[in-house]
Length: 494
Image (tube, rainbow, N blue to C red; front, side, top):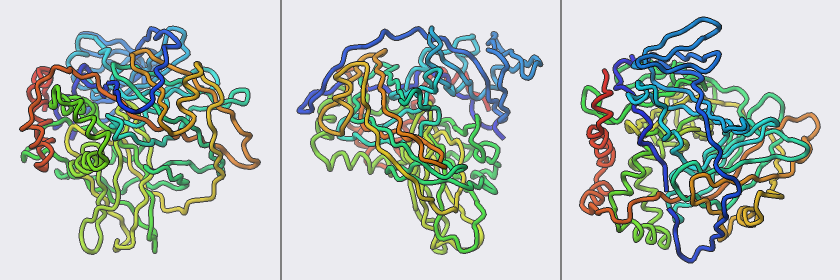
């Protein structure tokens, strides 16, 4: 089934990068508090095109045409051209910072090179787990200018209290300027055995009995359950090329068993912006050339302009994926999954109204544009939300005084990280866990960022207008950009 997909792309192009803005916003530019540590990438596993996940006992080695490593003590040799995704563990020289990155394979890796561009992304948040900082969140993706600033909510599964404190490391690992307005923790004490998963708006939901899809099929009838039914290292990420009928969208229908009388459900998702979709942020903004700063100023100062950008992105489903539910009157849009990632897709709940659904099944349809989405898993939870006890915790100290002043409240002060290697640490008090309950911690952050674009670029005004006005034009443009990419031609495989 996966052999019908084109060869996945190398990560040598894929940024989410962004630029510093002037204006009436008050910004405190904080100097670097630490030099960027040298990093080492360790190949810890692969996912093949057929959906097989191999986790190596020790670091694997990339040869000219294969990957070699031991799995449960037995040597495995995997042809490079059968790898869909590389799983890298990145550590710093002192082994105190760890990030696990899922990197699409490509022909560059056939040369034994792991592209340094795996550092392309949005802000990275690392949680202190008692021994080291572990990559745990990648917030407010897509907020490419101040007018699109947004709140982000994400669980921090690796965060642990250490001597009465929680600690976070915030890093800029790319050539972009990141502007953070707020960092606060929500400590959520809840019944043991349930998980806490936020929705897009910061609502907290208990997940007690998630049910995987009974079926998941695409427009060709291919079974996608091996890719979408579990929260694992299988991620469905079609490339920006048309299928046999010329279509540039997949059409996926997920079917879940519906308990008798269930009128509401919680769709649990791990869905992220694809690596190519992240690259297209830069490509689309680059079409504005030297006029991009004027466009930023317009979006920043005119709320209707920012709303128009959001509406366009939702219509085209580039960075927000519509959820259609089959009701007695047909397919109805009942929710939206926001993009996140691309390296760490956040787990989200989308509450769904099921009053129009008939029968003992819930059918959900998604039509992701190819190249823009990486689908991890879907599940439905029909259990009612349980009571939780939530404390909002502000940071009490930081690696520099200006950091603390900038991020304690959502206001006109921002913590600016304009350089690759900028980083800051934050410490929060850890309230005692309430008796008989378990704790989850959610990060509430708010911010935006700017790509570092060529200020002398030539604008293609006619193309920009077409992409904004003609439905589907942006997806077609993405496919044309991919076809022109030399690596796509060299690495194409059916």
